[in-house]
Image (cartoon, rainbow, N blue to C red; front, top):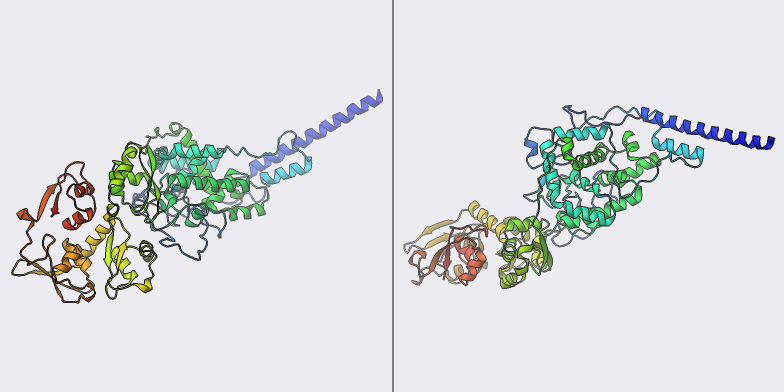
Length: 605
């Protein structure tokens, strides 16, 4: 009996010791909670409110405090193999036509820099962090039968924790940029089905879509001052590392589908390393090196630990709270005072194969749609034309896809893109030619078989790699900027005096005639021997002047004037009259391929 009572007494003492240990743990946790004062970010309603990640075009002129861009996917750290926003690695050999830092396109949304917002006073140095308490508990107890210490998170869930920092950003989105944030929520509906499906297939949290919203405002044309581009704001180095093509012709960071695939792969790599979606998001923004350094300083720390100890940059400390705040609002907009987002959809599309360079106007005609729709569906093509000498996939509306192949095949190969041609004259260099047409030397070389600049020859004809719209506008601008000295002789023929820098190409474009006709009207003049002060006759109706066979447009024999009808395009009109689209552009001195019902066009015979 004595032995049995002794065992009971031992069990009671063991349980009492365990209860005392549990009580000590709870006290430690309570101390950490009371001592930890988070860096709360902007004070609700204060004039120095922090800013969000992106801005609409023209937002800087509104007079309100714009949100900071959520920087280039991490521009803070030294070059790192997996950072979405680290510095680009040096490239030993530049690809032909590749652009190291492509300039923003006209439709790009430029994002402002972060404002300087003072940090709150650090009051956390004296107390232990939750990570330190967790480690102490494990060491003291050797195990965690009651689950007091935090366990690993579910990789399919991005936890939404509410605290003062998150609450301040919710207030900021509601009050300071409420109208703009509503726009972002509406724009999200364009790409939401595609992004959520890809996240689901990869086993990643659905709420990572709000990382893209904070990065870019859900715009594939978002462009930061750190040269980060697209829905997921990749810089070129990280984009290429995850398989995105970035060149003169293409920037797949703007491709919603391919950029989403790259972002999922990158975020998956970061989560695999850090084991926390908050830390993965912080590494996506500020670079993994900074997160690694923070974890070396405080082993086992959470994102909040690193943020409270200011081991992360201010922008990165705000980055995760922004995502959480955006997700909370996105889950229930009405609860936070936002109307239900108006759904913005893009046309249902299919992908078709395009074998060689083709202008968007030709693609639009073949697909039975307009250029704006082709641009909306294919934001990755930078020049309104597909790349030359290669086959690519292009998205076209599903309604016109069935007849696309037949319509496209009916367009002659030499009319699928209206190139501009330049004849090399004495003193011309690729650099000078590029300046005249607004293209880079690398693009000129790529469009002309990787041309060697040292072997440029007088009389050589170069392809200028721009679509009809772009090249026509530049040629018109060049013509107006450089007036041509001309007079009319006794026979009513225009006579041009050659000036410095002028070529037969420039003069022919100015007067809407071909170089061949201009040469024939002037005794088959040699383009290589054109001299300053030389006078040239301008042929009328495409025939040499002074031969007696040329007729004016008004007499009806040399040309006809047609009126553009609804549904007409340059290609259809050219086909109807057995001429080329290039001829119509030259004859009518068009600066683009766009025409409208009621326009009058001259067709020469």
